[in-house]
Length: 166
Image 1 (cartoon, rainbow, N blue to C red):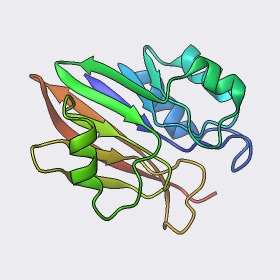
Image 2: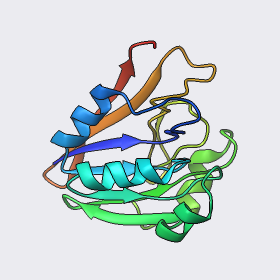
Image 3: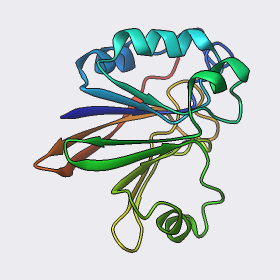
């Protein structure tokens, strides 16, 4: 099972549209997990239309229309792996222990907010993944998103995709 992980798209504030490379991966994916800060309902509509399955949450920059359609936290079992999606996890120091305590029922937690790619494992085995942002790199060298593969009920491959500078 191939998954696309994305967050902090901020369309149309940070970009007029999502990058073509990301949209191509969305088309090929079995599921897309979006960790909030869509900003525009049109982006949600686009990904709902293009993705085979979309699991998303709202972020701090998402208004009432998006909050009416999306939860604050989402959970899904994909290929036997227990995924969670949330926008904010708090400050980086202590994140692993804090998230392991908050989400003991998960194998993988996808989060956003910082625009900083993140891939760590908490005590007890919770994997924490932040795909960064495909449209707003902030102080990062590249805009990014992630893909991952689930095989035999395990996360077997996580790839951070760096997008070309616009």
